[in-house]
Length: 141
Image 1 (cartoon, rainbow, N blue to C red):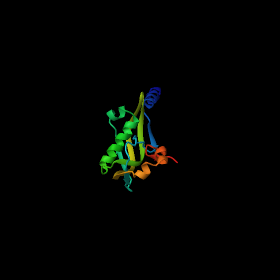
Image 2: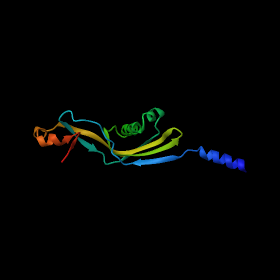
Image 3: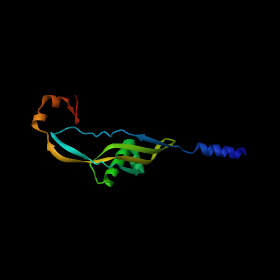
Image 4: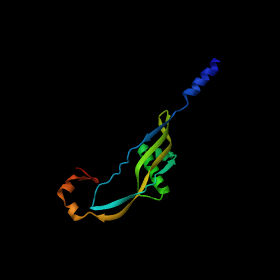
């Protein structure tokens, strides 16, 4: 009886736990304003969801790389949009001895396309207040 109890305790100690992490953060896009060209963003009203099991190569670069790969594949599978608005991630990962392994990542959001590229009007762009308060696409009050 003691041997069976000992074997059960050892087997239980070597089993792994799976955790699920949900986020509702907006993915930051890196970019600076290099010219006075702007575009309108056409956002789809339909929310799309995509799940993937990331490969070891994708996981080696970290969690950020896994999220970007999931967004890229989601956009390719759902109409080849330009950006995913209001992206939410659900990550199922497994704790290992020396780190974690991501078993499944699910991303959902609204696909959007850039439309109607046009230059900023000179009256807006040459405005001193606008230029002083404009930083990376955000106008500060």
